[in-house]
Image 1 (cartoon, rainbow, N blue to C red):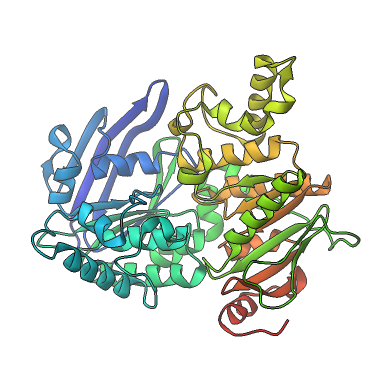
Image 2: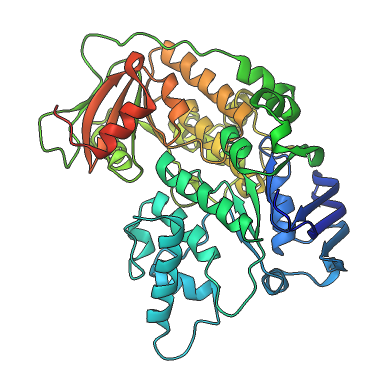
Length: 484
């Protein structure tokens, strides 16, 4: 930790409930000036709720929040948080898709005003992007909707560090690398350390244990709405961090997923990427788990959409697990159960109508199988934490009768224990003959694939068997022209 030893913000006995769900219970925690504080725990542990209290978007039911030595809970809100130099980059992106990058910057920085404000906003956001993500290739006049999700996340992060005649003391980063490839994620984490060394503070929420151990000064572990452990990051190991998170996470991490040999015979998918300059195709056989990798935004998601459209046109059918759940995944006005069963309604009919008992039973089955944390499946989908929403999207795809499951970087914001549970379910379903095509920005997830296609500039440039997989090989293929 750096030498700026003073409490910037302090939680004292903070509690928060949503109906019968106790999201926070008697939380005591401080964030020091000049430190990166890690916050980790399973989905629904209370991390994002606690940070929403700090950001002013939620009010605590009890306890006190101090900024410096001033208690602010009774009068606290987003505007006051900003006045105290506190900003938050939430897991669910808040950019307006129909506006430009510069216009979105102006929305969060009202001090950018007057004649030529667009030019000023453009210069500020591009300078912030240059500082955090050198080589980003994002322009201030780009329309947000036209950017891939990884670049939208980069804009969201860079926007939080734009400063115009105002304080910037603390930035909350909630799963900031969830849509970034490893190279861009490393750029961000290096910037975090530079920011902290100048006296700024970061609260980093991440389920990637290596990021937490390498970047944070202290790590706080939450479980079931409580703080259960706070230690210097140097006093944790990968194993001890998982152990503090709970026995479920530990057991899941100890599971070993066996990957089958590459299948032979006729593939169920043979797809040539739209921008492919040679004859190379992406092939997937029954029972295979096929990985797509490479730098984010290089055509992997577009290939999944190509395959989905082909399957729909041919009547074959396929299920998609969207990574961008806010825009492409959840039906925000529906219940958790309705979100899970929507892809299975044709098989839940009794005569011409949907059988409510069958629908309820299917939702309950997949709640148990995916471990979705809710007291009532009739609750709105948005009552769930981000990771539990993602589990509901997995449940929707796997509960369907589709033999082909397409996964578009689906583990965004999912805790380490849940990830291993989902990996195990994927392996079980593949063993039954279902085929998975899985785009991921997390290199460790490629270990669960039978073979991997590396993408560059919209093209598949290499097909790697799992036995030849290495980070160096992937990075080399991502940047260097390869021969097919």
